[in-house]
Length: 285
Image 1 (cartoon, rainbow, N blue to C red):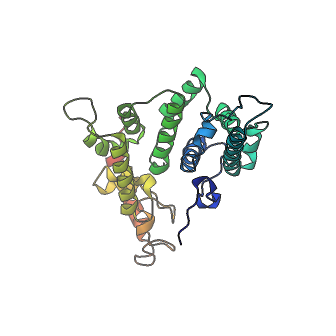
Image 2: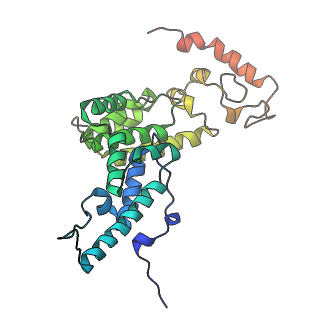
């Protein structure tokens, strides 16, 4: 014997999403919209399926009462869906709302800053979000994409080509050799989409982390630029806090090669690096 379940009756536990807070409106809205759509409640929330009105409000027919009751049931389910996905601090934003559409509208008014000032604020944040060699590139790219989506909600579209160039310009100089390979060789137009480029950046980021072994990605880009031993002078070990090597190669206690070298091996390396510092880095340009 088979059973079927109406989408609107699906238990909320089947969908686990992070509750709305001060910082996650864009992903929250997208996920809740998907849930409402799957349950046949999106038109209720958007206000396109309005409450039926009887021809004679004082004497509604049986069919008119049934239609109204059906709508009220769907609206109640939509309200519940919204309420259960709000954190305590966000409940204040739906205060006074009598329908799911009113709840949705009030949330949008608070979260989607309209007008030129809102767009200007987001544009500034987009252009000023810059990574350095200590930045988690995965988090950095995600933040750029989130700002782009917020701008799209406000009607300010950042084209895919512009967004790709923004990503490239926001990366540290240590990524220049990597990013230059994906710019158009014969013109200023990029040869790939932002989605493709992000995939390549994340893959390269993982590769750099793996190459460092212990995750000393902060110094990877600078250490990679030179193949002379003098370049390693700039690398600092996060285990012993000395320069000239990374934690994966550290002979001190807690290092990746603990006990494998002489007791003063790392110090000898640093002394040697100090001797060649002027030769490699002493010139000011």
